[in-house]
Image (cartoon, rainbow, N blue to C red):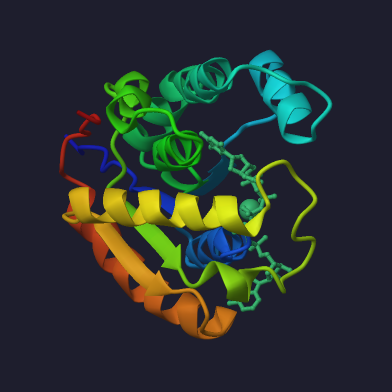
Length: 211
Ligand code: Z5A
Ligand code: MG
């Protein structure tokens, strides 16, 4: 009897304009070109009804209390959990652009309690690896379209970066930090070598949850 090998759950995290969407796309394209079943996702997933409220908030057309929008971001992940689990168990690798850690980083940067921010994430599927793209916030402000959405202010992003660093320290066993100031091509090749090892390593491992 052949046992289905599960896919890997890979997340990209980092401050605004650190290159997450670029690197997620490059990695997904590469894996697909090698015949590996791969699906890309990003959070917030703006098409659901919860996602549409989040989109209105981010584009400044709707205001909500900090606690409420935090829980909506988390609910947006919970509403996709069955889908994510099914994909992984049928052998598809998932490349996810932002996840729970963005939820904690942005809300804690606003002043909400770190542990309170983490609490609704507990029980969600835990990624096999998080690729954290890190560089100074100043260097990111020169990149395309910076400043168009609610959170894209330098002082706020610096606080977000501090929380990401705290999470990276806490979750060090599966976080991989990269210097996001290097070229997209160099970053891609470094990320690829870790991702390819990971795919083989996790295929027989059970899924885990955030605790
Ligand atoms: N948010 C939250 O508060 N709570 C949550 O739970 C979640 C999210 C999940 C929207 O996210 C907001 O939601 C976000 C956090 C908050 N805050 N804000 N604002 P989003 O993911 O939709 O944001 P985005 O619009 O995709 O932007 P981004 O993610 O910040 O950008 P990026 O994906 O990291 O970068 P990129 O699009 O790949 O690249 C940006 C530019 O830089 C582009 O012109 C590239 O060509 C260029 N680039 C990329 N890589 C490089 C390198 N290596 N060198 C030079 N230039 C580069
Ligand atoms: Mg992006």
